[in-house]
Image (tube, rainbow, N blue to C red; front, side, top):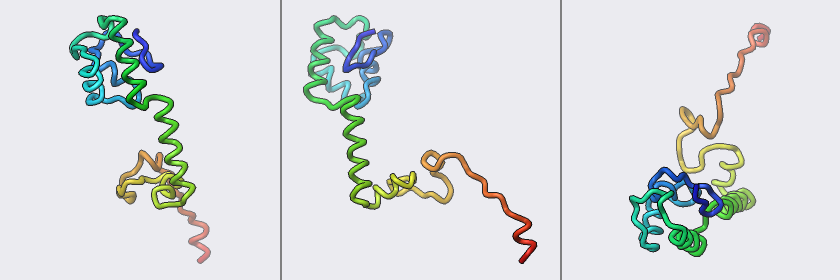
Length: 127
């Protein structure tokens, strides 16, 4: 398995797909990287020569923020939003969707599994 940006990319996949295993690189970025390094998209990752792999690594380090550095940057941005107490920061803090989605019906991804609230019959009987 070739190692790029601290990630072992799968050797049996095409290089354009294998690069997407790196956090911060999608299909479009992978195509741009390969075009800049003059490497064919259809070659398998295991068939890419070492000198071409070195070109890819240097291009990524020079032009892209990936993996740990990108994750750290995103975390800092979210922390900043929470500190200034803007709407998006409050939504992050509450664990609710930040981008305008409805929460009455869906939003289970952010809210987590349903927590059923039991109805107390003894309290209702007293009133």
